[in-house]
Image 1 (spheres, rainbow, N blue to C red):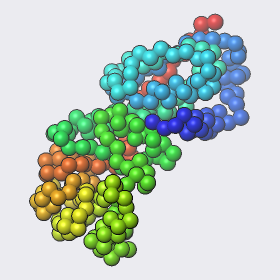
Image 2 (cartoon, one colour):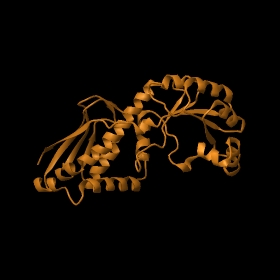
Image 3 (cartoon, one colour):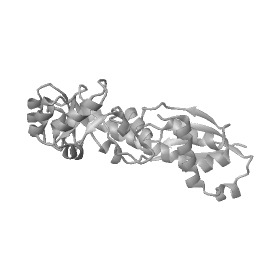
Image 4 (spheres, rainbow, N blue to C red):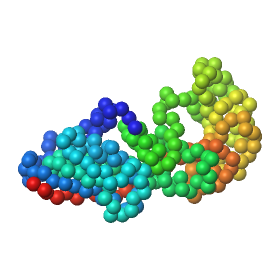
Length: 280
């Protein structure tokens, strides 16, 4: 998912944001020694993601808190199902509630959204991937939730691979010039991907030796024409304007990869709640 150091830093930022100088309500009403138990409940159908984050939030506030996982990551959950049982001091349970649920609701929302796309895919031979359209600072988490939902990740960062886009092409003086420059500078182990917007550009990219050709914002018929012109010389990725309504048609057009920014940027948080009761 991400390193422990980075994860703790993100959790600390979230807790600092939510707690401020102190949880005045809880500290006023609840004795520091009071103990209790809590249950986290799904309020709607969802795919579960983010359990390690939720637990890490509470442990950041009190390492002695104990958990009993009722379900595992990736589980399909029905409404009113208990996801997690927690035992420990009531103050950290109440103080960490919102931050823990924020992580859990957001990541489960992405996993649930992604699972719907996966279920709509007409074949498993095509790779459904995300993009870099993620919440700043949350990329590793959101891409983790994409994997939990059943899809795969595109680049995690700009350092993960060469993807030549329209502005790169314009600056370099054309498709062939950009590919030749990248090929000359890149190690032989690195694949070159380039974005094109017409079938003619797709053929030029294939002839120039691109390893992966991204067809940007093309309709199904135009995609099929581009695939014929590429003629197996490169992997074909389709991107731009992909949604659940056109996913089947795009997937049937002969491409290898479908990238969908909506997997992350259009996912809605699911409804999850926490109920607490005192035990001592």
